[in-house]
Length: 176
Image (cartoon, rainbow, N blue to C red; front, side, top):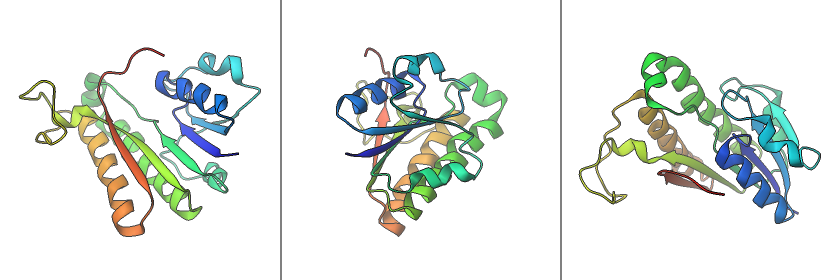
């Protein structure tokens, strides 16, 4: 049985991923601070999962939960443009420092793979639609920059430490 950690598991994407992982027989741990995710998204399966309420931007005992973890789906992040302009430090702490802490815990405990939820916002306002992944990177807001910096950390941890990673640049996500 696979042991999976899903950060941001109480959010829209995360809670659907939790459901799918459970349907495939995985042991699931959700790490979320519930600043945007909702515990109600997990109510129907809360007796089947482990929930850790914590701030991933701060190192702590929560990182010990990565021991014997096979896969980490790192979805936790603050999102939205205007709030990131109003409070860039909060976005940096969550999206950059939080990603650093996830990567370090994953490296320390030899996680098999980290899947990172990057963002298409790194392209800024694109010149062409649909946007090709080879388009120029032009983050225009603190949110976009912090997600791109997180993506760079993820890829760097692969290059330097050979931590197996996948980075997915999500566009608009909808539906189950």
